Amino acid sequence: MVEYYDNDFSFEEHQQESEQKLKSMPSSAETNDSDIIDDDQCAELHPNMQAECWDGFHTNHSTGNFFKPRRYIMKCFPCILDHYASDDTSKQIVSSAGRKRLVLEVGCGSGSSCLPILRNCSESETTVLACDCSAVAVNVCKSVVEKSTDEVISTNFGAFVSDPSLMSDETDTSFTQDVKAAHLQLLKETSTNNVDDIGLADIVLMVFVLSAVPPKRVPRFIKQIYDATKPGGKICFRDYALFDLPMMRFKENHCVHSTCSDSDGTRPRLYARGDGTLSRFFSLDTVKDIFESAGFIMEELRYATVYNDNRKTGERLKRAFVHALFRKP
Image (cartoon, rainbow, N blue to C red; front, side):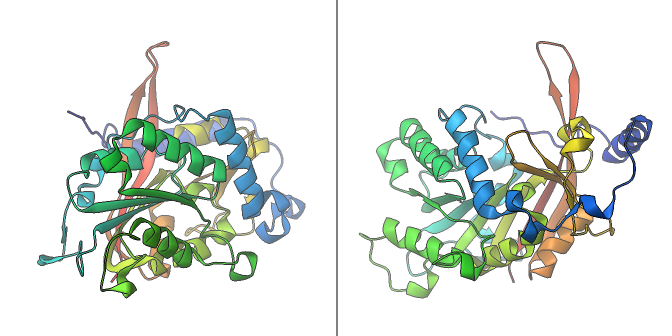
């Protein structure tokens, strides 16, 4: 039985404590105009360069054991197992014309999120597609799923390389075309009468992926997710919140000063790890603005606060995430 906790401590109190801690830390001079980076002019922030950075990360962690299976996903987002739209329990959002319900994970990494879904949905009529900008990640994900599930489950799964942040002149195919091609590949031996329904996801899982997208690319990224989502489909979102532990640990020289702005007018809390991958920390208002600007309707939005106990040191660590559920009208 998986226990799920997301309200271990008050986010408001944690925010106050964190702000006081940041004020007490030594800091360099204020940011100069020369420190501010235009995402489009910075090679390190181009999606292709970020894909290379993630290739390097997953090459170094090719066993897929770096991230443990996120067994809490089903508790966190019960709609993954729910066959009905929340606003109309008489209307199924799953199969139309007999096709299986489609769950799409964007930014699958090594498969730590899609694996629990496959295991829990294996008896239902559910297909799982997973994609990532990193070709190495996709190969690791495929390997992990093949080793961890039986043949029946793996036939309901497909993984492919695609990056929704790429502009139309940077790729030969759009994200929606990539999803449709991958979906058709799984359905090649299945007859279906509703071709328009192919490649449209009933559930889209976005877990710790938007934080890795260069801020200026986020509107394009979300717009392509919108286009690949079925009307009535849900977006299950979880990502790093402001004042999460890694944000508090980043050194000032790892901060990336983007020209973009968060909902409060400040620059995104964006950092570059040592391997070049990005990590952004969100407020609720920023997440709300990002998705609603693309046309999604908010159903759930809150901070999730979790204690992580370090068994070796006995230290209790505070983690803070943004939990959200959006719907395409």
